[in-house]
Image (tube, rainbow, N blue to C red; front, side, top):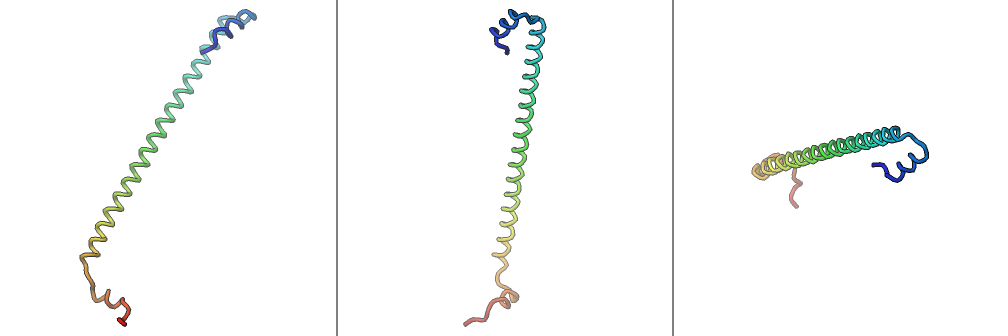
Amino acid sequence: MADISLIADLVRAGLDPELLQRVALELARGQAAIAAAERVEAERAAKAEAAAEAKREANAERQRRFRERHNGSNALRGVTERDEALLPPPR
């Protein structure tokens, strides 16, 4: 809010008190609008960060399941003729 002594000085200097009151009200409204916009932006940023974190977690879980599925299938498969053909000859 406006400084009371500043308002009193302006009234003594000859400015219209009603005009000062209107200006003070408009300034307060402007400050409230700015604060509301900042809150909305902070909420939007928080939601975006939460969504990004959820996406990272989902990707990590999907990769974990993929690795688990494929690593398990490789371990159970064993050595095949094709695998043996790819090995270098014994020394």
